[in-house]
Image (tube, rainbow, N blue to C red; front, top):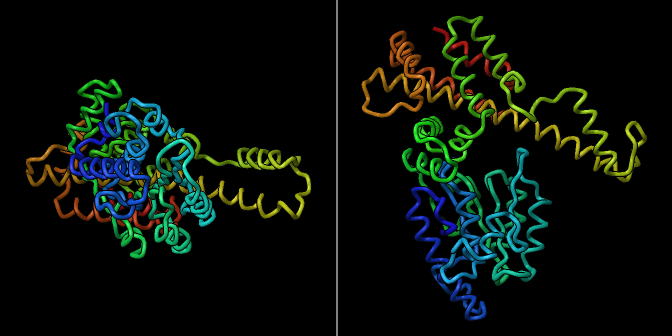
Length: 394
C-alpha cells in the first residue's frame, strides 16, 4: 500500500511527486552533492488545489516518500513512512494555525531548525499548511531560507492557489496542482477506508462537493452532519422576515447548532484564564508579575482569536451549504442534466424552484457569496446572517 493511495483522482500530481522522490533517492545516494542540480527534485514545493483536494495529505505523503527506506519510495510499510503519516517523525515538521494568521515567530523557529542536519531520516522536511495565512512580514522570514536552503532541507507550502503567496516565494517553488476529485471517487474512498455504506457515502460526497475532509466528516461525524441538516432545514423554513431573524439567531449560535468547543461564556473564559496562570505557577486572581504580563495577555488574545476563527469557520460552512442549495434550485429550473448536490433535499429544492425564478435564485446565490466575503472582513456574524437570510424569504 503506497502513501499516495489516499490522493483520490490526483494521478498527474502523484506522477510528478513520484519522479521527484526517485530523484531524491539518487541525490541521497550521491551524498547530497547534486541536490540542486536535479531537475526533478526541488528544495521548495507549492501544493495548490481547491479546498478538499488533499493538499496537506499530498504534502505529508510526499514527506513520507522522501524519508522512505522501503524498496519502492512511499511504500507505506516501513517505519519511516508510518512515522511520517502518523505525525511522529522527528525530521518532518508541520505548521498549521487555528488563528487568523501564521505568526512570524513560528516560522522563524522553523527557519532556524532548517539548517540542522536531519536526525533519523534522509531529509529535513517542513510542511506549512494554509501558507496563504502568512502575512508579508512572516513571508519575508521564510524567504531567506527558501533562497539559501540547507542541503538536505525541503519546504512544502500548501495553499489554494499560486496567487495566494507572494511572487518572491512562488517564483522559488515548484508547483504541484491538485484537482477536485470526482464524487464517485470520494464515495469509494469513504466506503473502503471508513466503512461507510455506499448510499450514505455517495450522499456525503455529493453534499461535500468532493471535499474529502468534509465528506468524511458528514459520513462519520454526527456533529458535522447535524450542522448541515439544521442549516438546510432552517433555510427551507424561511417565509418572512421573522423566520429569517429566527434562523439567523440560531445559525450563529454554536450551542444551538450542536457544535462543540466554540461557545465562550464568562465561566469558560475564567477557567481558561486560571489554567494559563497555573501553567506559569500563579494563582487565579493573583497579581501577574511584569515579566510575564505580556505573555499572559498574548495567550488570552490568541484564545479569543481561536474562538473567533472557529465561529467564522462554522458560519462559512453554513453559507456554503446554502449556496449549494440554490445552485440545485437553478439546476432544476434550467433542466440541467447534472446531479443535485443535495439530493436528499430534492423535495424542498423542487418546492423553492417552483416559487421563484432563475434570476431570483442567482440573486440569492450572489447574496450568500457576498456574505462569505463580508465574513472575512470581521462583520458582526448576527447582522451578517440576518441581512443574508432576509433576502431568502419566499
